[in-house]
Length: 342
Image 1 (cartoon, helix red, strand yellow):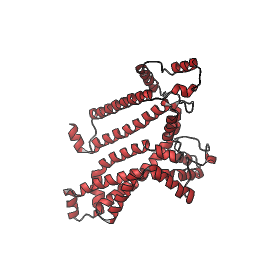
Image 2 (cartoon, helix red, strand yellow):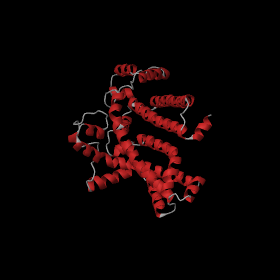
Image 3 (cartoon, one colour):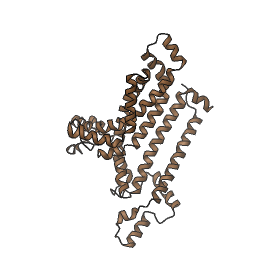
Image 4 (cartoon, one colour):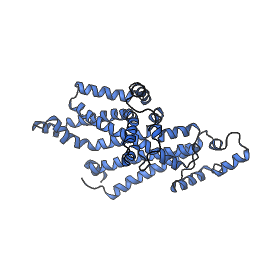
């Protein structure tokens, strides 16, 4: 493995920054042209016209849009996303409280989808057209076809209301709220760090069902792509030579195929992780999960554009950052990419 050149890394970083700036421009303009009235949401529709005009001037909405954009960029440089109409708090404070819940849910979901999807795809490719392969393809098809909200509702009815195997909606039972001091913002980790094992198991009972349901769609995609990558490698000469030398099928997969598809899997996992972070909205609504998806949905209902734009920027930035890291990993580990860059 050779190190990625400084020039190549700088070029990719510049692409990331340009993409981020375009995202800022697009989200800001959309936030300003949508037929919403943030001033009316603050002062009320029956407010005095002078109070309405004063609030409009205070928010800077009476300025030309390019001046509003520069003021917004200046605020972002100081970590100021504006004030949320929904809560009256700074948007940055609301996001700092809501994002860890989404991050915890999406991270557990991507761990589950990886540890199930990758082995399932490898085995399906190794035993192509067998019962295992056909089952894996059906599982992937169902995961790609049925909406997440349907799985969520059915899961709550069966495993919570019917069998009582998991916790209900929300991140934790009400009588446990406030007993764990936020350190990382991740309830599972914070409860363990503070020795609150009872709260840990309660939080795990609440998160496991939405995490599994959220992971299912990602697992279906990972399984399908892993199977495709593996089938492509199994037809290569080096695999045929390894099998001719007496290497077992599992040994061929582990020692030869998996290292050659590792870079492709990194890209797939990064895309899946970003998709889980931005696609957790429906899951959070079904399970009343207090994450960034539910926060942005509630903000959208009342036209709170500061919260909506800020949430969109954060999620978009994370998605682009994950793709950037996957792109860098591709360039570092794949010699063909290094040769193409020269």
